Amino acid sequence: MNHALRPRRLVVALFASVCAGATQAHTGLHGTGAFSIGFMHPLTGMDHLLAMLALGVWACSMKARTGRWVMLTFPAMMAVGFMFGKSGDSPSGLEAALAGSVAVLVLMILAVRNAQPGIAAPMVAFFGLLHGWAHGMEMPADAASGSYAAGFLSATIALHLAGFLVARQTRLFSRSRLQD
Image (cartoon, rainbow, N blue to C red; front, top):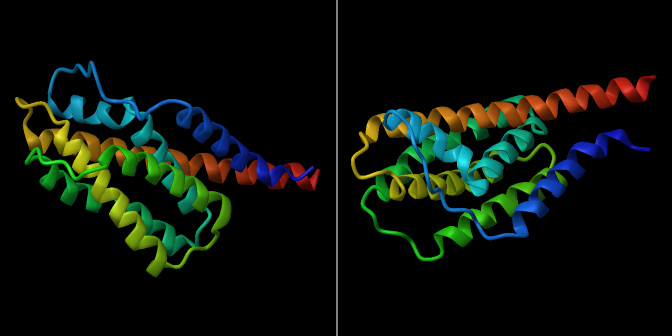
C-alpha cells in the first residue's frame, strides 16, 4: 500500500464534506475586541479554513522558495482585498468563487507538485484577494479595521503553517513507515 497517498485522501475527504453543504456564513462571532473577532473569522467559515489549510499543504509539496512565496502572497493580497471589501461592495459570485478557491487548491494538492512561481503566485494572489475582500465585507461596523485585519491575517498565517506542518509531518511519517 502506498502510504504517501493518505494525506491526499484526507484532503479530498475534508473537501467532500464541505461540498456537501453550502459555503458557511460567519455568524455569531463574539470577542472582546476587533483583533479577536478578526482572528476567529477564518476559523469559523469552512471556505476560509479549508482554503488556508490547503494552501499550506500545497506549499509543502513545492520547492522551498516557491512554497514560501505562495504562503506570503496569500496574506499580502488578502490585505489588499480587505481594503476593497471594507467599501461594502461585493463582486458578483464572491461566495461561489470562495468555494471554488477551495476546490482549485485541493486539485492543486492532488495534481501539481513543484508548481512554478509564475503559475502558483498569480493564482494564489487572486484567491487571497477574494478571501480578503470577504473579510472586509464581513467586518463588524464598530470594529477597528487595523486590529480586525491583524487578527484575520494572524489566523491566516497560522493556518498556512498548520497545513504546511501537518503535510510535512505526514510525509515524514509515511517515509519512515515505508522504510520499516
